[in-house]
Image (cartoon, rainbow, N blue to C red):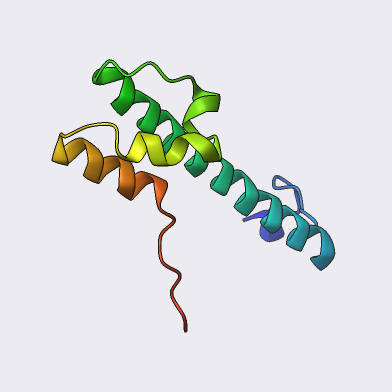
Length: 94
């Protein structure tokens, strides 16, 4: 329709250079990882708070406190969840 009428109703767009596209892709991936990391931290904090264990966000992710947190309860479901959230997922090899 635009070609037949001679009017320019849709503006042309320009793509950025490949280097800029790559940087944008890397930044998007970084933001995704940061978001996932925050979600994990919030879930761990929530689990501990539900069971009335008073840890701050900083204490939860302090290397010295991790083992104490993993062994904090006799509740098997809580320990399982904490261990799953604190352990990094295994890497797939292709």
